Amino acid sequence: MKRIGILTSGGDSPGMNAAIRAVVRCGIDAGLEVWGIERGYEGLLDGEIKRMDRSSVGDILHRGGTVLKTARSERFMEASWIDKGAQMLRTFEIEGLVVIGGDGSLKGGLELAKRGIKVMGLPGTIDNDLGYTDFTIGFDTAVTTVLDAVGKIRDTSSAHDRTTVIEVMGRHCGDIALFAAVAGGAECALVPEEPEDINKVCRKIIEGSNRGKLHSIVIKAEGTSTPSDKLTKIIEERTGKETKLVVLSYLQRGGSPTLNDRMLATLCGAKAVELLREESESKAIGTCSGQIVAYDLEEALKMPRRFDSNLYDLVDVLSK
Ligand code: F6P
Image 1 (tube, rainbow, N blue to C red):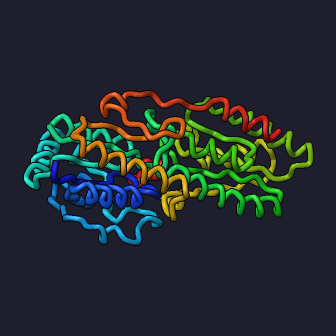
Image 2 (image 1 turned 30 degrees about the horizontal axis):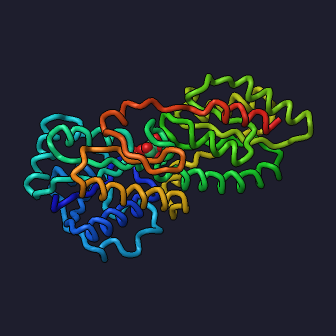
Image 3 (image 1 turned 120 degrees about the horizontal axis):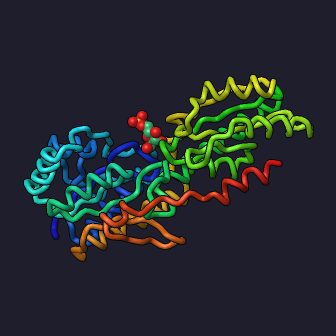
């Protein structure tokens, strides 16, 4: 293999740049040409492909976002467009491709793998919703950002004896809410993986208030069934306590990656190059019990996600 490509796809996540840097610099060090594809699969279809050198990834390790840009591609859902994408890679004589993105992006990579491209998938998403890896690139930074917000919101919540519902991202996965609730000392976490019991949340707030705890933080994942504004009103009505809503939204996707995300991104990027150099079959690269792992791409994408219900129960115990 002489020439490899790299793209970022789907929602950006902090650490994507660190992964790009690792792939470019390790790739060049291994004697490969590295070509950057802009705007994910959209850019691939439109031929937005440029050669990268060591200096093109200078000064990006610590930056959020992605220098290659990203996009969600409707076109790449269709077989005929995927065929065109594979053809475009062949036109540029790119035999191996590193895809950094979430579930949908890696599934796109699998389709290219079925068309003869060697694809290495890196888990780039804040959601932590991929079953084959303990952590995804960007999750640690997103939770750290949420924790910073929780600390600030607690100050004002406590000054006014208020309840605050904080809505966090994660799509169908509750990990951002769960980890932020444990590490941020929230009264409750609401996650899509567990039944939504609003009365239990209200009881918790009232019981806390009876013990003299006059402010409460509820961290709610965006994927739970009751919309956040409605939930906030219900909590206010049922507890009789003033309740505010804060939606953290895209704030969670930006910012400089944490140590954990920089390390994970860098080690996954280096592993991707090592595997491409060996002309390995397509793999999904991630982490398991602190080690970098690589699984068959198709098998990895079938692995079910495990929700940590012990951690969920702990939120309750810790906030009694
Ligand atoms: O997948 C990352 C994520 O930030 C999710 O948590 C969120 O639901 C979604 O992307 C938002 O997507 P978009 O950037 O397309 O609005």
